[in-house]
Amino acid sequence: MTPWVSLLVAGAVGSALTLVVSRFVSFYIERQLRRAPTLPSGFRAQRKAHRLEAPPTSRPRSKTCEHFLRQVPGQLDQIALAVAAGDCAVVRVRTHKLKGSCAAIGAQAMMALCANLELCPDNQHELVNMLRLQFARTRTELLDELMVGGRVAS
Image 1 (cartoon, rainbow, N blue to C red):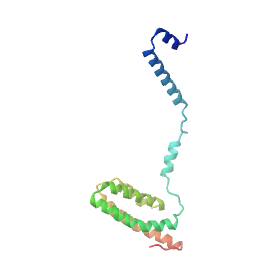
Image 2 (cartoon, rainbow, N blue to C red):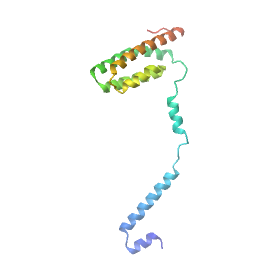
Image 3 (cartoon, helix red, strand yellow):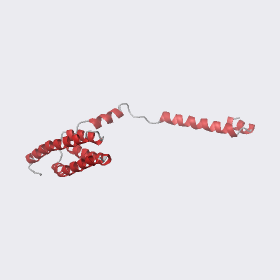
Image 4 (spheres, helix red, strand yellow):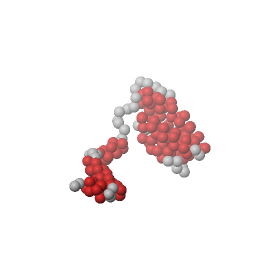
């Protein structure tokens, strides 16, 4: 006689059935977890290392650079206004957007400043000024590259 039949015959269906079902479910879940596919060793480390790699050495397209040069001054003004108003939520959104633009052209120093400013530290005014200075340097470098490539942006 199987355990199920003996339990039914004995009339101990209530709590015994619950116990049997819960043990079966526990056993089934454990077995499935043991069979679950695992990530290859080092997979997470590879993904993390890939994220931290330096940007590709290829130059950004000239249209991207021109767009960057046109849009960033306005973004910097919006960030400065948000800092002056003490609106940390707007500072975070604007600096995150600017950080993405900087990543697109490979402006690492500006990206680092944006990342710091995104945290809304106490020295926000100083960081905004440093960001403006770094943009001036980046702008000069981009204009030089664009003039060498035969295109000129303002």
